[in-house]
Image 1 (cartoon, rainbow, N blue to C red):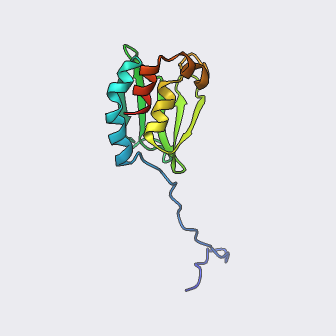
Image 2 (cartoon, rainbow, N blue to C red; image 1 turned 90 degrees about the vertical axis):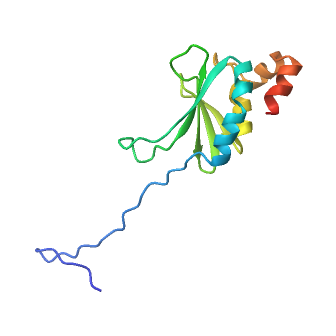
Image 3 (cartoon, rainbow, N blue to C red; image 1 turned 45 degrees about the vertical axis):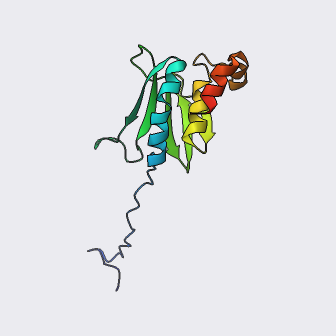
Length: 138
């Protein structure tokens, strides 16, 4: 099959349309988030909401998990799948918390990282042992 020709005699080379790769939260991610809801409440978070992609969103936007402090209208943390890992970031600053293998690892990291910007190590050192044990095992 030959390539189509334009009226000017130029050859038109068709390129296949590439759709962006959009990674969604897995069923395992969703179940893990539900299991962590009670643990999140111990750290002052009252809502964990999975936002689904809307038709008018940019094509590379997939679903993501938002974590809200009690009484707040804006999310403190968000998690989304990127490159096979879960990316966690602080919503107020856009600062990355890190990339994690599992939802449990990602949620432990964000729940133990103060929104004020302290390091995870500082947050871990300040936690009483029972709270730390509850945080790392859903």
